[in-house]
Image (cartoon, each protein chain N blue to C red):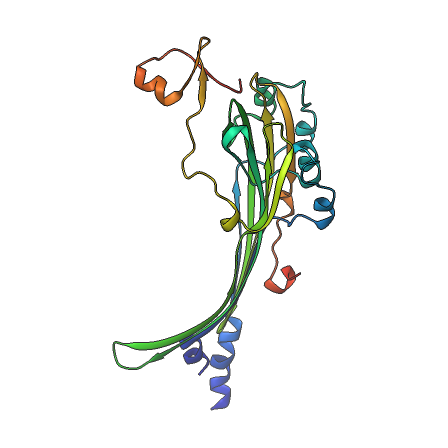
Length: 127
Length: 157
């Protein structure tokens, strides 16, 4: 009797499921290109040529700032019987370029973390 | 029994992270009334948000979160068509960060830390972009309402 039931008792433990997924918004930003943009020299047209159309434009009086953005989310989940583990990690490449009234680049700020998003379990991500 | 247990009891452990927190080392070199926008960008990188404040001032926000959720749910069939359930959640989530205010000369005038939802007073609706038509600057909405269809460029161009 026990031998007959054993496979059915073990089956739920073998039926654990898992998935990983990756969600990306836009393309990774080229850090090397961004570092070549020189405040006081580059113009809005230069930035357009180098990076293309921005994801966002913010008006700052008669000045403006443009945002370039790449987002990457990596998710991993594991489920067995009554326990479900889920982890998501979202990182982004962001570049803000600031222009004066004449369209001359005044400031550039960049963060390039998009590639560091990772598939992990909840305990791995704990700090 | 395992099947029955799985159908009425569930335990979830979730963790969600977004962006790296600003390091204390990066923030330690920033001084209100002394540092400027270039120094802030060099130390902290690109902010999450930038927005306009009155009198030519502006603000930037850096934000991140570490969300942790441990939950359990129990569901017990009571009758043919009804079931009762009880759940418990330990929920710890919020976007935290730093908001910095700059004057018109892009000198840092304020630095506040905390939950961004409490710090950010960004206008719900942005004003229209300026369009330079040579003689005077008009907003895009004014231009549309006046029926003008000539080419224009943003103030940044």
